Length: 254
Image 1 (cartoon, helix red, strand yellow):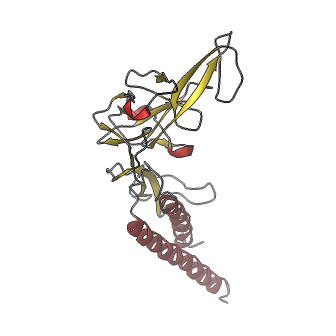
Image 2: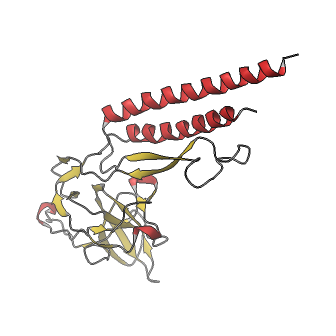
Image 3: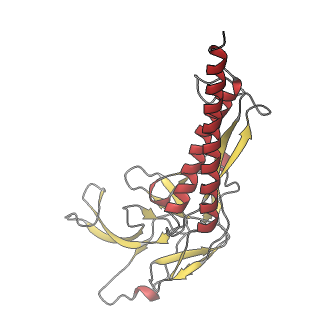
């Protein structure tokens, strides 16, 4: 079959992946702390020869190489909540899953206080669970994960009936990486570092209490890219149709 058929098929598939990226950015335009992703393409002819699919020939068209995080700063919005935090500058909040100990990172500083009770065996039960041990309050992300402090440990908050949260100094930690390239995205707007991000270090950003950082997804830009992607997708499908018509014409020659 004509090589144009395979080139167009690869192009249509890659434009669909590109559309998924921009669609996800649009869906999170109102998500606090969200970082948009920017798709990047490379040529299969001039770059390392790789196949998109085993059913397609090698070295045709282009592929979406990656969709990297756009780390440009975004505006902050005042919320007047004592447990809302934003980072001015570079850095991330760190949250730890109590079940697995896995630490992930986010720019969303919408936190809450969660109650955990230490049982006789030293284990911890989450808020709302009856226990006979010592009860402590921790800063969490509202999804059952602990927020880590500037010392890398869980933040314990001493509360009583007269406690004023606005007067408590929460030692929220800010952490950063040398390289932002390659973060894996998880649920609830969380990021998981990979080897090439380097070792985690303390961030240089400034902590702002009572504010949340808005999404840095630009709605006008994303919509323009969606239209551009749709037109490219249509063009690729027309190439498939044209290639099919040419092949049919050749096959019908007598």
